Length: 106
Image 1: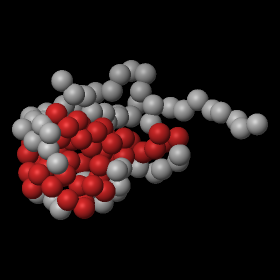
Image 2: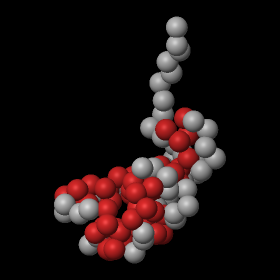
Image 3: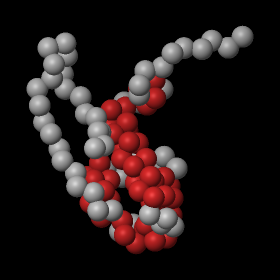
């Protein structure tokens, strides 16, 4: 029988990646890029031109291969797709000593 364990809200943390928080942020941004592309009926070729990257690179990113792409580049992609991006820095709650990074779409 296979043991099943309940995961956290971050699959990258669950599989033990050292930059789990950063990978989670990238995954959220990439998912939004894909959603915007679908909503605008953009092909990967069309979107790649808008985003300033090659179609093969975009294809890899959309398949979750985004280790070589920075959060800054993904934020630039949001801007190129017509989205405003705000970065808000605030103190953590009393329950946490260290901060965290998350992506929230309005």
